Image (tube, rainbow, N blue to C red; front, side):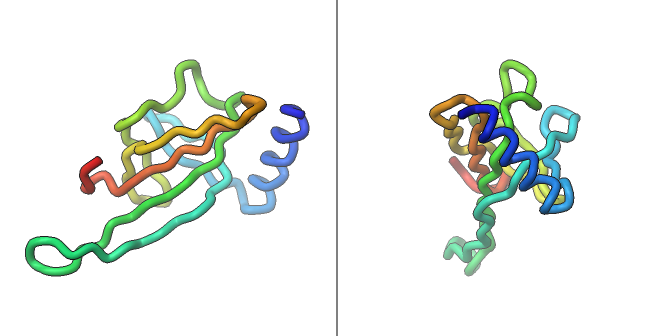
Length: 104
């Protein structure tokens, strides 16, 4: 099952044009999921806060991979890891990031 999941993610990456994210100074292939810009009311009015979910094959990441509160960049925007959700078969991990300027 893990090989099928990895094959499917590779196919998705190619179909999306080979998107990557940068973590620890190196680029890694990914399949972006949900990407939201929220408007949150704070001091001085509404401010944008970004969230993103990236599906990443574990085979392309070093051990250990990204950890909570570590920064990564996707399409020129910097995020902080807020949540990591590994797949049941270990083939991939969903990395959920929040705006680096947003508190966790």
